[in-house]
View 1: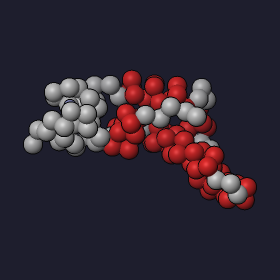
View 2: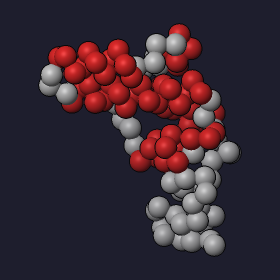
View 3: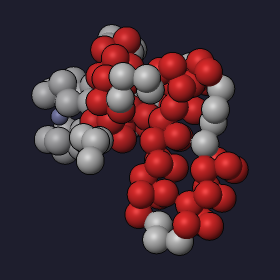
View 4: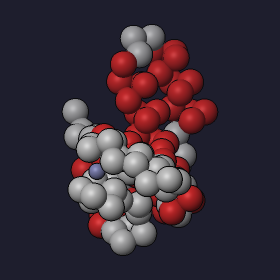
Length: 108
Ligand SMILES: [Zn+2]
């Protein structure tokens, strides 16, 4: 199973506006793949695959070296643009967050 951490979730769900459309679609593909892996009905798996997987070559290209590589690359591309706690430097849940998910420091 791919290592999707809380940090990745904060980045891809909470800092969505920083992603390129291709990165957002690749993230979505990963979520759909996860649903497909958990689903036990072949017909439903097929439906997810045909309806929800984005087959744009640019999107597939981002995932070419696996989910981990894609997640790492995107995290490092966005370094410096993401919001971090002024106290402990943890990555915030969203780009508008005012409370740290790690140390509970807040800055309203
Ligand atoms: Zn903090």
